[in-house]
Image (cartoon, rainbow, N blue to C red; front, side, top):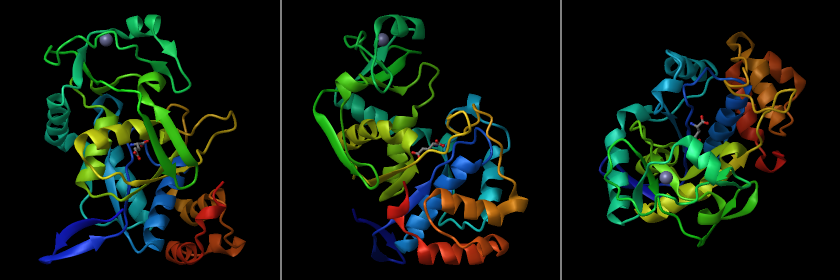
Length: 300
Ligand code: GLU
Ligand code: ZN
């Protein structure tokens, strides 16, 4: 995938632009470090750019100060981003424009179902509850209701760099999904698609927990006429009970005083074979080794 941007009055072809898109629901933990390291290295070995975007759409889940601390941590780890950091909380007009475009296609409707009603009426599929389309007859103009996009059953296929060929039929696998919640918050699925397109992201590297969201994102990209980036979904870091490291599972923030050994541990987690002595080196020597020796096909 190649997209163009204008720089210094010349059209320059960007062959690789990646991103790391943390939600400030907590500080970086080992799981988010692994995602950051992989997306950074993939960008570097492709001579590409690496952008950072703060996904702070849901104010109720935000930990005060986490955004700036995450950026401080990345800097401290020697991960230098390109361009300005963008904040989703500042970009609602873009999401509203995209929502309006999908509405013009006649595919958006108001959903007045409560969580309880949905839980009582829906089937739980492999990906979770499948919304049965109860409110499909509604107009999209009811105030203070969730807005859903109508899906269909055309297969959506993509080739994940690590996981191979992935296919879903949205109507039967997830059902119509929410684009804007009843409280007015734009859904992750919409915001991520708008921002990846608007920032000309060509390559998305992120955790496998988002693999199942990708067909919904590709569906929105198709509706909005956006380019479809390449996707690479990484293994998820779990704790000793097998749960994904996250704020909910009380993952500890990484300790920057141990940065070299954490970077080396992240590389090992990703199947790379850094020599033991590397943990005694400074961050920039670790990055140099990592860029020279990065082998994506070693990731499990
Ligand atoms: N903000 C999401 C997270 O922290 C990542 C979204 C993405 O990479 O698409 O889990
Ligand atoms: Zn409904």
